[in-house]
Amino acid sequence: MSQGFFQIALTLALMVAIAPFFGAYMARVYTYHPSRLDPVMHPVENLVYRLSGLRKRADMTGWQYARAVLWSNLAMGIWVFLIFMLQGALPLNPTGLGAPPWDLALHTAISFVTNTNQQHYSGETTFSYASQVWALGFLMFTSAATGLAVAIAFIRGLTGRPLGNFYADLIRSITRILLPISVVGGLLLLLAGVPETLAGPAVVTTLDGAQQAIARGPVAHFEAIKELGENGGGFFGINSAHPFENPSGFTNLLEMLLMMSIPTALIFTYGAFAHNLKQAWLIFWMVFAIFVGLIILTAVGEYQGNPAVNGILGSAAPNLEGKEVRFGWAQTALWAVMTTGTMCGAVNGMHDSLMPTGGFSTLFNMFLQIVWGGQGTGTAYLFVYLILAVFLTGLMVGRTPEFLGRKIEKQEIVLASVILLVHPFAILLPAAITLAFPDTLSGISNPGFHGVSQVIYEYASAAANNGSGFEGLGDNTLWWNLSASVSLLLGRYVPIVSLLLLADGLSRKQTVPETAGTLRTDTVLFTSVTAGVILILGALTFFPVLALGPVAEAFQIASGA
Image (tube, rainbow, N blue to C red):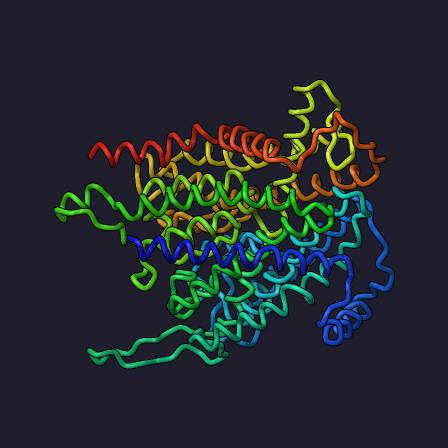
């Protein structure tokens, strides 16, 4: 037990050590400070600008920025869908795979363009190397860069700056952050045993004399951007539980640090923009406290194991169902909370086999979306809660609410409400329809309370742009592919447009001079109030489905029913 919790503590300590330095670096990137990468990346960026015709990189309004996001993402989604449908005629297809069904291709294109990477297929048997690299790998960079660009635009508006230019932010996110780190991460994974090849499957003779084909491919570079960009889509069906994606404890640690690096650091990027690192640290520790609480809840549940199994064994034993022995209960529990906290969605174990406490934590993360949240957008959601906390506390003391010297008025509250309310709408409505027809639509593999969790988890994963799943669910059907696609689109683009309009409105407001009555937002008291607002507004919205799912299942297991 002590070794498992030591591994968790060491990983968290490394994460805390990296975050402020990486956050400061990203602030320099988006304020165009000189960098050692300039001699290498300036020519690359200029070439992209010339080829794309993007000569003028003028600042955009909120609507202009939003339209640029929507049109570019639409174009990329159509491009990828066409690659899928023409897969059989394209090169880099050593196993001769044909086109997938149209509904699966549509769901996959939408899933990856929204930075969700929800997979209703096994990659090694569905998509060719061309589809994996030219389509999915391409979107892993551009969808992650889109989220980063929106987050930076939101931070700029929040701190009184123009929002910037989406295309410039998109390109700079790739050339200065995603690409260089992915190259280093991919090389480290390659050295650690992750394959990177365009050769077809390896055919070997087994011990009993049979022939077996072992799938492989260009995995190392795919794996690096999968984690760094919080994409989560696996080259293989079992994702980071596969030994070719994640062969050892070292690669497991490296992939978790890649997964956590950007969402944790963006809080300090905000602190640099706002010239208020004190507030950044307070917000960081607030989120960290919720995060650690969920890790402890999950890890203790996995360590104590299943009472029914323990009764058969005659002694207590960790829950190892659905886990890779090389990672064990501790690293699987930590990864599960990290991947749903960051909205990465990659898995190194079977989430469907987690104890109810693990199911509770993973669902809770996707409901809140701020521990640590999606690629870029999670940080923006966090500040939406801060704005709501300012509004509520301002009403309590009878003052017009202000945040960073700008008044919070009707427009800001309406947009903040839209951002937060679209999430339960995109989860609970389709889930209710699905559960109303359990035999024809749901695909539930476990009846009862766990089956409710399976359905809710799939839509929560889609709406939160996470992508992981309770993979006992039979989700490769026409209903699931189309209904989940709706949740994917609602959960991604309605909040993005609202965030940009919210930031644009704040950037145009005159600052109000600070007085003795001004509510300071960089205090322990206000941060505690914000935590309360997050837990009340975020958690209570979904309390009924948590009670019907993992909470009820926990009582059922404890009672031996």
